[in-house]
Length: 117
Image (cartoon, rainbow, N blue to C red):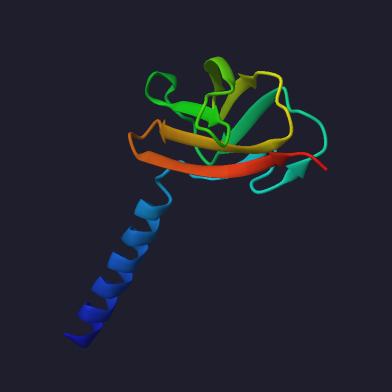
């Protein structure tokens, strides 16, 4: 009986880890999360741990007043999402994203970056 409980516990722990891996998490961003860049960026690029569904994924970039500074629709290719930016003056910008991975799990997040010295 004791061995059965131990085996079941290991199986449940393993299943929990598999479920955690089933979400498309942000792996990298350009500009980097929390970074300061010296020149204005032309686009924001986000790379996720899984491919994402373009019809149900989006990103927006706003300035400190909440005005959108992104341009057009995001371009999605596999696990990467890109969006063009207007000419950015010095300041702080927030990137907000939400994605639906190809296995139908939704994730979302946000981060800031700064343009300036």
